[in-house]
Image (cartoon, rainbow, N blue to C red):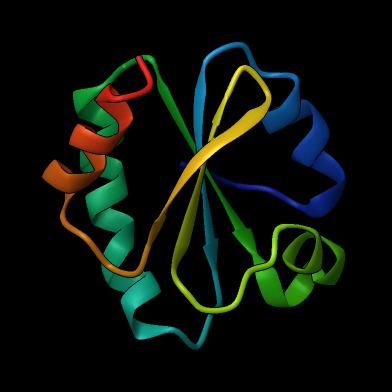
Length: 103
């Protein structure tokens, strides 16, 4: 799982062929920190899945463009298109099941 800056979003997410989860987080968010190992488990279970993190408080345009209202929020992209999201803290099995819907 890689943390990206707003300037990397185009190349890391929108130009990626496949499924990407964008973990939108804030440093002060406890649930965001709890979510990280769950995302790592999902990424290991689904080798075709790419997971990136983006700090919404350091990327004001991104948070505004994608209407981020609370943390954590996971945006799901397939071949550069936003196809879904997962709100809040969830376990890895929930993430895996949701991603399988888009495969």
